[in-house]
Length: 351
Image 1 (cartoon, rainbow, N blue to C red):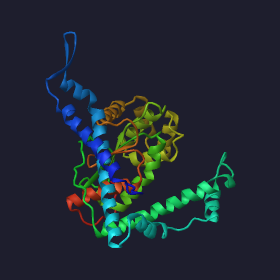
Image 2: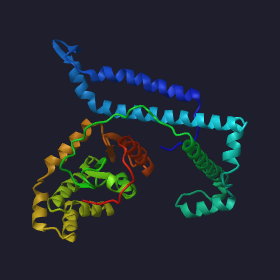
Image 3: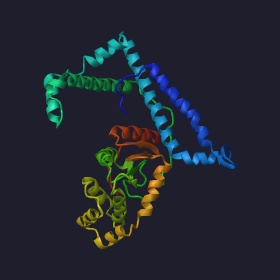
Image 4: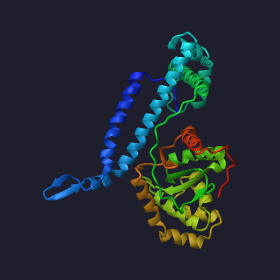
């Protein structure tokens, strides 16, 4: 989670009120039972039928509510730390932030902005002189946000914050899927992914960073969730399983994400050949759609869990959606390791 500013108490209370209201609704919807909640002529619709129909949406909503509450509690805690530090320094909060943040943040010069501009400009980018004032202001704001985060890190170290609300968890039917890391790792990250999804490709580097950092404490499990909008995603998912049949899932996985333009059936067969697979077996496996039912079972599992896009992750059953930065994984993993009392990280090992 990125804390770039301290929110007002009114915003915090408002956010928590919304979350609390939603949580009051959730148990009613999740209770289930034979109670009739609607009729159509003589036909009855029970609460259990309603709950089954909205289970995916409720799972996603529950995760979002937890994230909202967690973020708001962290912001309220940070606000308290700032207030206490300002009081100790005999300063008002604005004066304290000016002293500890604004005055200590690097001052962005026109030369800094021009260098940044030159490194990132592209076709259609307005001339530097037209945007330099806004660019300098934005870069200065970023510098101050980073300085504020450094300050908060120091304050949190002196007065650690404990978020006591419990995260929602789900059981994911991931047995038998390709994995990296020890089977007994204290942290299991289940990824629902699409070989043609650009955001899934983007998060690959992040996942490597996470595995490098936490080593044998983390196990990564791959599950398929090809999206209908990607014309070869289903083919690629089936091909991945054909590669797994020959013990080559992860090399095949890496090759597909390395070049997402080569995922037609012909390209998939060429990739299998390049990786040294038995092409006769691989081609027959792919042509016969041997593992399509398994792929579709993953898709249904994902939908039941509330997934509607990729990538989506479950870290020890806790949902994390999208191409998140490493810090988002770190936050959950650190909380889970602390709860389990796990010690120092070990060197990563791939199964």
